[in-house]
Length: 71
Image (tube, rainbow, N blue to C red):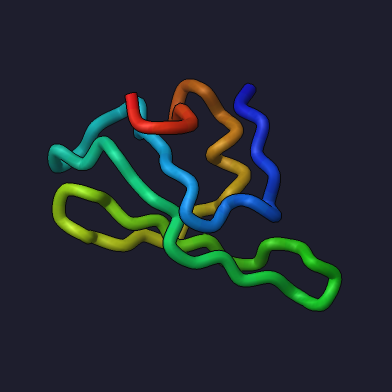
C-alpha cells in the first residue's frame, strides 16, 4: 500500500499502472480541503497531454493502480 499524506499531495508526481490513452505520468495540480482539513476534491493532470481528471485521492494508496513518482 502506498503511503499518502493529504497535506503534501499538491504537485506530487504519480505513475498510473494501467495505462490508457498513453497517459502514464501524472501530477496532482489541485487539492481542495474542507474546514476540518479533509480532502474533498483532488485534480490530477496527465503530463503527456494536460488532460485533467477528478480522482478519489484514496485510490492513490492502491499499488495496483498507482505508484508514487514517475517510473
